[in-house]
Amino acid sequence: MAKCFLFTVDSYVLEEIWRKESFVFLELEGFCMHYFITGGAGFIGSHLCEYLLEQGHRVSVLDNLSTGSMDNILHLKGNSLFSYEIDSVTNVPLLGKMVSECDIVIHLAAAVGVNLVVESPVQTIHTNVDGTEFVLKEANKKKKKVLIASTSEVYGKSNKIPFQEEDDLILGPPTKGRWSYACSKALDEFLALAYWREKKLPVVICRFFNTVGPRQTGRYGMVLPRFIKQALSNSPITVYGDGTQSRCFIYVGEVCKAIYSLTLEDKAVGEIYNIGSQEEITIADLAHRVRDKVGISTEIKYIPYHDAYTQGFEDMQRRVPCIKKIHQLLGFSPEMKLEQILDRMVDFIARFS
Image 1: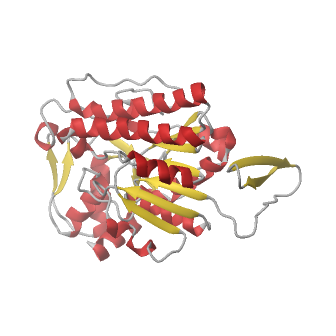
Image 2: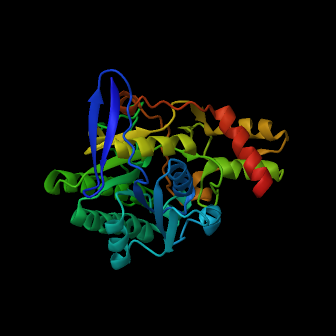
Image 3: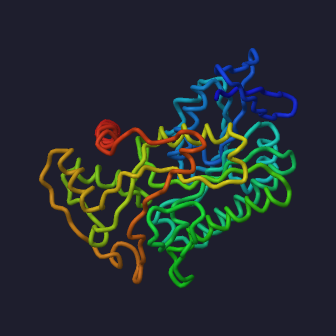
């Protein structure tokens, strides 16, 4: 069964028309969608800007550069379809203006990284919860579709592997500040779905699982760029905990494709989707893979969690997504293997660090 999209410019509505035989795409001459990305100067956001521009769409960005960087989007400034504002989503008049001018909102702005979450829980909670509330309020005024970026962290301490979107969320106690991020993102999800059910604001929620790629920084605790930078400098590779905790890494380009496809799919509205790989690896094995890839014999050093973060820090032992739901909707399945991801990241960090 093939699909045709009809764009209605004045109402910014995407109407799906299903055909039996061939794929037809009705393209109105000179017409493109206008995407508004909060947090668009961040790691995922900057790659998403590139991807959407490559598809011929207009992109506007709002970012306060708290964890993003102008370096991530400088190369886009000459594109007539790209624009940006350096400010926060808490600037409601500016936010409202940018929402009113777009067709689709992609809300990526958030406090990210374990280090930031542990060190600044107040900032984490306010940034995530308040920011999402402002975005949803402004989008609701014009009923603009919103894609909300959430996280695999919301699954918490669950040991039901792989994680499915309808699973219970098992979070740690509020006395452990590390869970403030997961809790704030779960609240974002509840709020977004409440706007859909009560006010009919079209929302889509994505839970990202360990997205990696060029331009990702290890500054906020992201493990893979940190390992690679340590290996390239022939410094000890520092593994937090005993290294038996496992993760699944997905390339940022594949995440961008999934995000884009979800924004165009009406059946995705009001739903939650895992976006991740199912190629699982322990962090200890990842350290060895990075060391072998770089071709050095540096020490792999294990640091207790209480020294790396705070006393009583709790981690998720395994983080493996079930991607059956997004596969059934879009046919999505990550193609890039960890070996290829390592090649790209080692090459990028070696050239630009």
